Length: 222
Image (cartoon, rainbow, N blue to C red; front, side, top):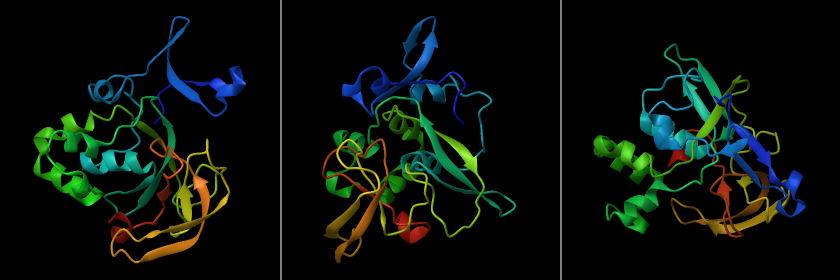
């Protein structure tokens, strides 16, 4: 969950030229200082008592942060939603890029399944790799409700599988209809359709960067 001492400063409220920009940290005296990064948090700094749920896979927990929301199945078979609540304010860095720089993978090999496979084969290096991304996502629990409905996006409405995009709101307005002309990432078939800009993301930066919501389940994960 969100730490009690996490402070968010809306820079746009102070300087109109910085509209939409925020910084996060913690107060030390009268100064805002950086909130602990992933490595510091993993050592027990800042989150004691804020646990929402314990999971059986560090890799799944990490990928849940990359996605920004998801579902957790409990031992009794029931399912809860975990929704994005906030971040620790550090920049997002892709672990795939780190593994490429280390010569462990090529850029062409970096996919979510390939990353999961590498991490499963190198459990002794998981913490090293995870900590190269200093950004940490905090969550809040939500009732599952209708299981066919997607998670809430930045507009506060559920995302629709195959129709919702996350965009950079500095360049494109939330709620805008967008025409997507690309290729399906699995079979390469043409993927041309009208989409809606309904979400944002820490890694979604730039005019040609968008995040396609494929939905729930193994096929969407692939």
